[in-house]
Amino acid sequence: MASDTDILDQIRGAPDLGALDQLRVSVLGKQGSITAQLKSLGSMDPDARAAEAPKIHAFREQVTSAIADRKASLEAADLDRKLATETIDLSMPADDRPLGTVHPVSQVMDELAEIFADLGFSVAEGPEIEDQWHNFTALNMPEFHPARAMQDTFYLDRHEGEEEPKVLRTHTSPVQIRAMQAAGAPLYVIAPGRVYRSDSDATHTPMFHQVEGLVIDRAIHMGHLKWTLETFLKAFLERDDVVLRMRPSYFPFTEPSAEVDVGYTLENGKRVIGGSDGFMEVLGSGMVHPKVIANCG
Image 1 (spheres, rainbow, N blue to C red):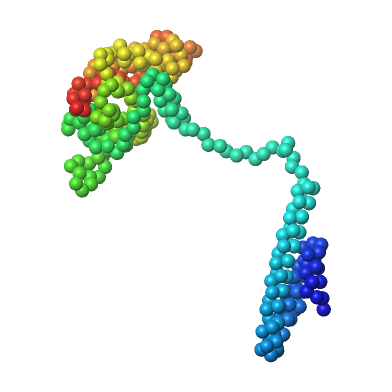
Image 2 (cartoon, one colour):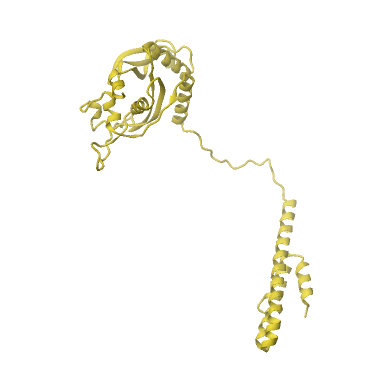
C-alpha cells in the first residue's frame, strides 16, 4: 500500500487530467484507499478510533486540496497550449452588428436648438399633460373657443378635486406661459416638444412635434421677428438665397399675426428653395398678444 507521501507525490506529478482522475478514484472513490480507512474506523475500539480518525480526515483534506491544485494547473497548461497553437485570422470579415442611430425627428430638433442657441435663445420645457388655463385660457382662448372642442383636443378623465379635466397639450405654447411666469423679462427661449391633437389622416398624426420661439424684451417689433426667422431659415435650409414672405393671419395669442412662406424655383418640375416662382408655407408667427402678457403678470 502506498504511503501518504507517495500518494501526494503521484497526484502532484499526474501528467494529464485523465491520470489525475484515476488517482482520485483510487484514493477517494467508493473502493479507494482513504474510503477503506474511514470504513475501518467502525471496527476499532474507542481509543484507537479517537486517535486515528483525525489523521485520516486530515489526510483526506490534503488529498482533496492537492487534486484541486493539480487540476487547475493542468487546465491552465492545456489552455496555454491551445492558445499557442490557434491563430486568429484578422482578415476574415466580422459579423455585421446593427447599430442604433438618432431618430430623424430628434436630429432635426437638436439642429433647431443649436441654431437658436447661436442666436442667444435657451431651451424651455414643460409638461405634456397640461391644465386648461395654461393650454387655452392664458393664451387668449376663452371657454368656448373652437380649439377647445372635443374633436380637436384630447381630454383626460377628471380626477377627484380637479375643477376641470386636464388635456394633452395641443401646442408647446403653454411652455411660453410657464417661462414668462417663472423668468419674467427679458426672455429669449424656444419650446420644442411633442404635442397632441385629435386629428389623423394621410397628412396628420395624433402626436407630432413643434418648436416655438418667444422673445419678451423692450422695443421688440416685427422687424426683429422677420430678421430672426430669415436668419434661422437660412441656417436650417443651408442656403443664403432664402426668400421670405409674410402674410397677415390670425392666431389668438399673437397680434399682429403672420404666416411665413419660403420662395422656391421650379427646376425640371422640382421645387428648389430660393427664388420666387412660388411660395411654400413653413410656419406661423406674430407678436405676443397684450392679453397673453397680461395673463402672465
